[in-house]
Image (cartoon, rainbow, N blue to C red; front, side, top):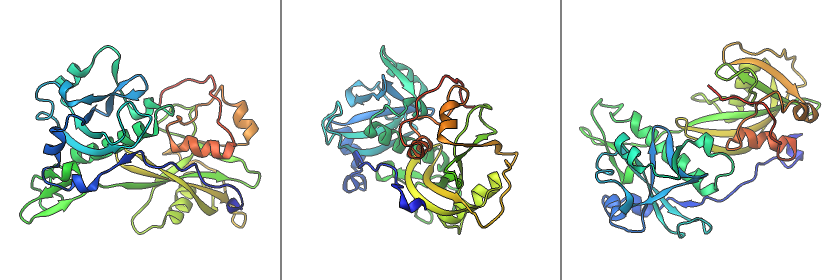
Length: 322
């Protein structure tokens, strides 16, 4: 049984205090923009300003003129709690979706634009948390400029965490799309990996899918695995979660066993999943030079390494997901 093993991913404490008492104030952004300690996480087109493999948190004084006024969105992310970060613990951080001219001016020797996937597993937990939060809320702003109730324009309030509609007055909050991602294990403790139609042919990962309205997480695990692979599973067991703001997912990790009481026929659905393969630990190790696995920043990689029992070494296969 899955519950008989150490069946949870490592849990780490948040490295950002989201500071609700300040962000609900009408003057929160005015206070933050007047505070010399405030740092800016600049984002543009799905990327953030970085210095090496760390986020470049820019003092307000270094922003080009008009950067705040021309921004697509400004969001208060909270206060850093990371004692080992370059900025002191307690530093307030705002995310600013800068315009293209401002983005170009922010590029300096040593500073480049990087996305969440490229940031990788070597980034600090604080940087990963800040970036995930920033992308998720800014993506939400980009798609909720108008109220789904009235069709009229909305305005941001609560330091970027709420959009307000008028006539009648109402509030709209950021949405999250829950998705299950599953380590499917057979009686021999092999793991099932699939190749998605959107990837190159040699990239394999865990099977995943969105939770539907009125559905429990466990039911979503059973339905998604059956739809994508033809495999009946049982004993779905929660492992851990990860925010994945592409654009607004919350990835909920599970392990499940092939149901021994129902006959399964392994078959990819032919639309999302084009190939399915069972791997023992030895077979996966022997395949690392020919297949690509999920990046180290993803919960898929964390679940794979939970099953593998140790960090999986990098192979020689190359490729970039489409």
